Length: 467
Ligand code: AMP
Ligand code: ZN
Image (tube, rainbow, N blue to C red; front, side):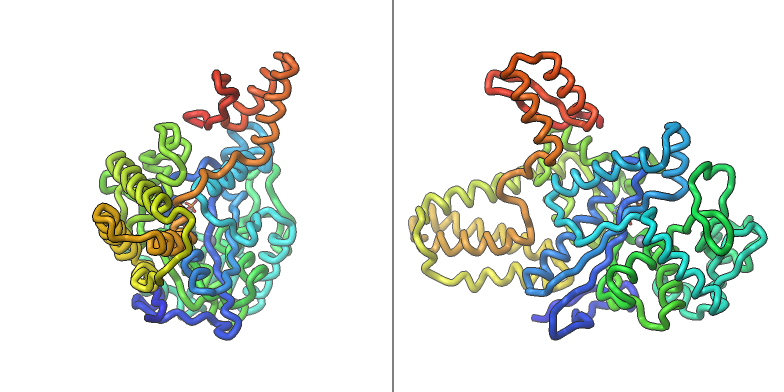
């Protein structure tokens, strides 16, 4: 069965063929976090869907090159740094670090590159793109000195989101009080500096200011992956205006089709509402870990429902996930005992149903359904004594293959390296009875969100709750 993916652009399931069909390279761009606070688990649903996609493509022997941007300048980050009374970079830095720790806790593969919006190279690339758009009459500088994209000059605008420009007026999706724009839907490419921005600004041919959010992604994607991408992902809320704007900007510059497959995941919900910072109905990963759940349990809970179906977050759901993982662990333990080091005697050809489920637009429910059916059947055979060591070993081999996608067994990820260094230094300080140093290191760990406890079995490091 061919690999098929649902393309938001065409609203249909399409067979997947990357641009580079011979080399099997897949260029993938995934919109990343805005680092003004800790990402919530709704954000991580999006990143986990992207991780599942990358891992499945790799299982199918594609070579994925993935970029994820870090938005470290926008209204919210600037406002945060102002209220904290510290420079922007100092304000965003701990949130960047926390984001990477959370990726590790959830076993999300690192992208090949995480460009930051404030990188000098990236700002230069954004300015170049805006210059090209200006030269092509696709952008203009308004009275307020900001530069806007002229959507009336880009006939395909609205094609991804499936609506026409007149609709944009009537739905009132876009603030219409910005009198100096030509069209209410024109969006900022370059935001002229104003007092609220304080010291945050860069020089440009249009005066001091900062880039708009949309141009960031167009510039970073083309800088790092080239003018044409195979896959571009995000949550459904990114479709409009963000991804629509990315298409207009990029294709406006290159004249080439920007993205072959647009993929979007449905939201993580709480009581029927999207989990979001603005509603306040969110949990960070740290909140969930503080309730005693592990990274792999959260990973499983957020991954087990098809990415295009809304997923309601509940604590019962977390319990079900814990039980499901417990069943898998017990099953693996039984298989290991039975196999007892024997070689695999049979092929688990029937096991291909798992991967075929994922070939069908990442149908994880079908894949997991097959997994649990297999667990039931093999457990029954073990009960009856009709499954021999070679067969048990074959199923273990199969598991190792599919766990390259699921990534739910094996050790919990280790402490982040800098935390491990501090933890080790504290052990040494205590051995040397240097209590002052030990206390200082405890404080340093606490400042990074980790708690050091001294138990009869030695020092234990856990995440601090509420951090
Ligand atoms: P943001 O930091 O708001 O730009 O979001 C980062 C990523 O998380 C984007 O791809 C969003 O579409 C996605 N996202 C935000 N909220 C949710 C949610 N409740 N469920 C799933 N994805 C989300
Ligand atoms: Zn983006």
